[in-house]
Image (tube, rainbow, N blue to C red):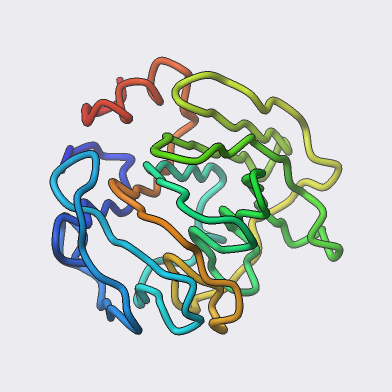
Length: 206
């Protein structure tokens, strides 16, 4: 796993759920298994509602003005699913058919509408989503290319919550993801396109 002072958490998912610093408590649930990924192994999820990886003890997103999420994803099925969610905060990568939604909710947004969509074809693809709470900036990348660049209507702090993070499902196990996730990372950094391209190759950003 790469090292960087702005990397809040990183999961290689190379046959185990632990993050690179072994700071957070994690549980692998349901039929979640390990299979080949981009870097070694990846977490594989079926359409079962109990498939997920739970991560507890992660800092409150409300503590940061800048948040970014990066991951390799192999979509193998249709339907809805959550690649990543923190319930209440609405900081999610969610999949609906072939569209990946980046939703980064602030305390002033009560409608969960602060989002943008990125095309999500079948097979392995790299995704990155970033938001700045104070300015409303939202950006998204697909395979290292900037495809979403907008300003949200609402600004303010990111929504405050200390509940678990969930990979591969909704927090309440109702929208499972069908496919694999590899090299998932959470950043406290305003990523550039050059940064995203380095991250997707397994290198630290500048």
